[in-house]
Length: 349
Ligand code: NAP
Ligand code: ZN
Image: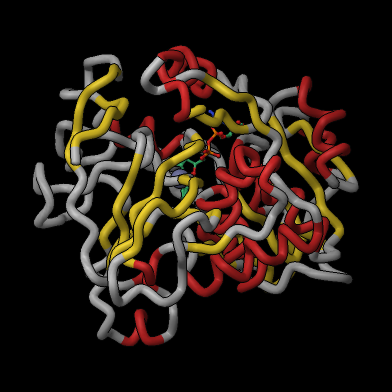
């Protein structure tokens, strides 16, 4: 079937409306009418060709929520009318150790929701800035939040799981001091989730204007990271720091805040590398730098259920599909509170 989407034909072209095809609903497929799609900074990196290997046309979007419109004959987990979500993964090999462990995000054959290999036209996947998507049932998540929160649930599908997974893996919880660096789409979810897990949360921002907001999001303390005295007050005190910043920056300033055996995990994926960290800063306190990529399907469901139980959604600003370029420009300035969400219902308007 042919549907409307928002995408681009080249990295230096603005995103605009286009027609794309979706495959027929196969035996294990779920066809979803998309209601809302969150706008992740990864969408911008990909659409503008900042990461190597963008395939065009590029239709970004991997924070998808909507309603099941059709299911294949073998689908058991979902039925027509259900509220569902799709995140960053639409396929994987289903036979490796990672897939067996429910860590499809680390499968070498993982297929991203956009820019991934597929036999469907045009030969690579096209994402959620579109009216509908057809996805194997394994990669479709159940949404149990109230329906009137649906738009604010969309960002959980990437920003939520990308922060939830490392917070869980590195043990954020009662008695732990956890830092979240960069209070954007990912970072504001990281603050909410770490707070709900019971950690003592310190938000690090470059934006003085986010100081009050970060406290309202659940931070116990806020540090404006350009202020050296504020940074120094937290030296050698953190168990864990989650760094979501989308641009290269001085990592040593944050490593110095880790106590012995502390870890800083990077989830931000800037287009060019960070300056190298000072090795002595790591050696002296047996500190570690790590990375983490989204999360597997079972953990994504766990995160959605955790958020529903704790009343957690994203703070969003709704945009029309034709406002995407203005939204990208504001995202680049850190001027989003705290996630843009595209109202797909207005795609045809
Ligand atoms: P975002 O909404 O633009 O937030 C990034 C935040 O980083 C900004 O709001 C800003 O926060 C801070 N920041 C930006 N430029 C900075 C600079 N030059 N120096 C210091 N701080 C700066 O982006 P996002 O959607 O949260 O995504 C963040 C990054 O994570 C992107 O690179 C994205 O591609 C990546 N990502 C990775 C994964 C994964 O699986 N690992 C998943 C999704 C996204 P303050 O105003 O508070 O300083
Ligand atoms: Zn994302």
